[in-house]
Length: 293
Image (cartoon, rainbow, N blue to C red; front, side, top):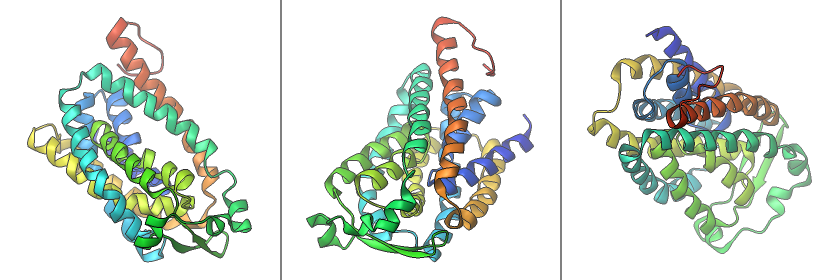
């Protein structure tokens, strides 16, 4: 196996993960399975370990920039960690074909959400809509509302957190998805914080990166104890992830996220197709073009 390719996959995963608030597993798992032919359970387990590295590298810089809402991250992680353990246990016993199908569906959802979410972000900031919405009682009690400086727009963005109970519930589902698919849960955390809880997209990204390391640690522990982590793959992947995440975190607050989300959506369309092709091949024996089976 070409370890340089593995490392490059890690760099791409870390870079995109830092920009989008994801763990990078949405790039690592499909690359390991569709491109390098790694078994999906082993790929998910190894990815979970590397997600910890990308979270540490990306989250540290976002905290220094004041983008991360630490109180919100700690609050949502109450149910996220429990969900991560649940997901990891389910992944160990779930049929391999089911994992391919679930991952394909998740990637298809994420590709669409990249185009939809955040398209009017600059306009919402200019109109003060994030601060104009009334925070719910629980958010007010816990002091979850916050602000950050947007380097691209050159303004201080204040926001009020809303629908906190719903966010807590969905965080459990995000944790289950993290443990089941090794993707860090950011696929749900970022859209929910942004669209449901009224948190601006950049603050959602920074907060998600902070949460992801804790979530992945819970599921990675289960995988490691069951001997599913490929240490030969984990080392070059982790190195690449750290390099990519550091670079991504350095530039995220200086660019317009909606442009990156549209590009990332296109990339995920292919990976969703690759996972669906794997599922079809294993269930009906039909090989679709453009994918290593």
